[in-house]
Amino acid sequence: MARKPVVVVGRKLPSAVEERLLRNYDARLNPDDRIYDSDTLLALCNGADAVLPSPTEQLSSAVIAKLPDSIRIIASYSVGVDHIDLQAARDRGIVVTNTPDVLSDATAEIAILLLLGAARRAAEGDRIVREGRWAAWSPNFMVGIQMTGKRLGIVGMGRVGRIVAKRARGFDMEIHYHNRRPIEGESARYHATVEELLPHADFLSLNCPLTPETRHLLDERRIALLPDGAVVANTARGPVVDDDALIGALKSGKVAAAGLDVFENEPAIDRRYRELENVFLLPHIGSATRETRDAMGFRALDNLDAFFAGKPPRDRVA
Ligand code: DGY
Image (tube, rainbow, N blue to C red; front, side, top):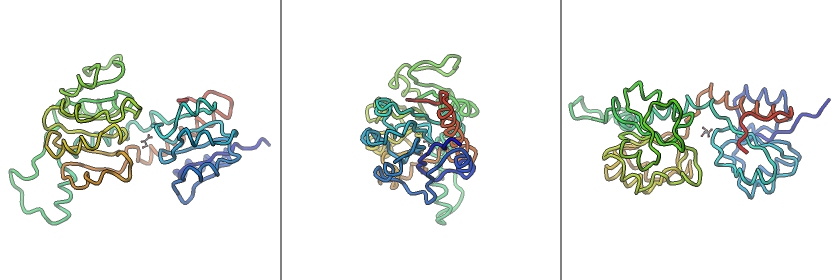
């Protein structure tokens, strides 16, 4: 009988995914769900054929350079691949795949939750009720910003951005977007640059991948282009936002409120966010639904199955 390919699995995965992994592969699972540092990950890769990492496993160029020659594919359990140096993988002839599509609905739900939660002061209201600080109904109490009918700017009209637009239309929002290229058949108004988009964004949703070009995309200069009192949501990657600039704008009121699911250096987020009432903070749960987490695992396994069957994996990114 042919030997099963050996797969190093970065994190503990949903049980249905691990069951399928164990049926078809010699899987080196992580039952205690430890976060592997680079040395541990490299040691586990000895004699393995594939790695199935999550965004918590950093496959920098230095780590990829030290992977054993036996590793032929990195099948990430994520759509974002900013934790993997794709060029370093290409240079070593290692195939890289991701898990697009399957998490778009779940992530778009969180984007809408953040926009609404920030605008309508959901976290602040929850704290007031929990802490017994709710005195009485009053016309001026907890007044927020209405989302219905406002203009929504979307940076990154990929799979998630398009679903955010679709959901936002349910709130009668006027949709504007920036993308590298206009999307054929998209009725929302296209802006060729982020700078052109921002003045139209009463609400702003960041949905672009993290690349060298999008690092600190939302900086002080660009925030100044937003309408006063804009609401910002980030479900992309933390470093797309310059924290100093956003925190300054939240303090001054230039940005009325922000909803953030992702952070630079997460989970060690900029502590100043914790002190602000006008931010709605979530712990990177964009894709965290049962259906989606299973689907991400199955999609990563589909990629591995294709690769080891000698076929092109569907989601090859390098
Ligand atoms: C991804 O897949 O890139 C997500 O950030 C994980 O939720």
